[in-house]
Length: 428
Image 1 (cartoon, helix red, strand yellow):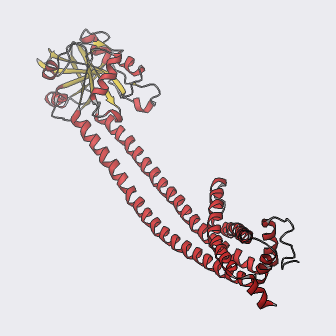
Image 2: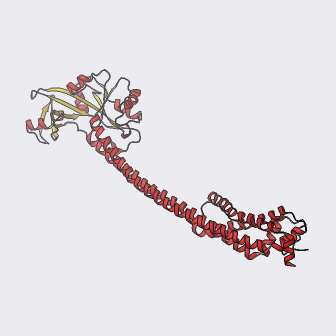
Image 3: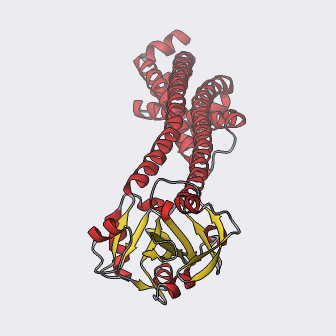
């Protein structure tokens, strides 16, 4: 005796194959079940894809703003570096044995060190200091005028290996010329181009510097080789002026430690007031730039939470509808199969076999529904990548089975509650 599927239950055919044949015979109900499950899975995947797309958009927006922030900070650092060069060096390296009290009192270092010390330091590639310049400074008696003035001569600026030429650009005092501080040129009423006698030689006034209210107003700037010759200090300088890197501002101990590896015993002092001001300005600018990014991040996160709640609501509604439709279709299927199950039972089919058959039917419907959901959702989420697609496929299968298998369990309970004798008696 054959059932409605045209297959004898005891022919040895596997329950999975029998379930597939049963789905083909009752194709309308199976198609409705698959479509319902597929729509639920598609809604869930569409919600996940929407959140994924929003997260990627958020990353792109934040990265764009962060790039703009970093570029702005880099431009600020470049401008700051140029400003620091215009303001002057913020480190002074004094010869070993030079007393700081005498240096501050006299305004110059009496001890000396070789002029090529600046070149040695630059060649060492220090991380904390980027530029060096040898300086000779002395207080002398201007015999021609009977005054005491400061003489200052600056050598070639030395940079770390790889420093750009424009970063080392300078305008040294040429040989045979001098530049005068404000008080000297005012007292002598000198102008650029005039000639004066100084240290036993004639010099042309190259420039007259503006008033500063400091020692520079009574300073005469000279060419370094000429100053060394006139002061009888050939190849020697009194100090090395240096420019600390931005990353080493206000880290004088770190600078001293690194310089000591090249020149043990050298004293390093820092113009901390100016450096503190510049460092505080940069820190405030960086904090302000970062502060512009945080509100955007918070706004995007708040929008994502709203989208997440909406996606959860839509997904839950779609899955509940799929589960409800599965229960209804399972009840209808159970009603239609009363006679069939009654015949199977009368022929000796065990209840467990009936339960497994319905289980396989639900498993097939869920699997096909998951595939349909993936296909329906593809126009909205596109190609997410192989790994993400595999994760979504596994999730789709779990969700589809969760929506279908409970309905199969309900159908099993219904069909097994009916007495085969009563069913067959009423149908005869």
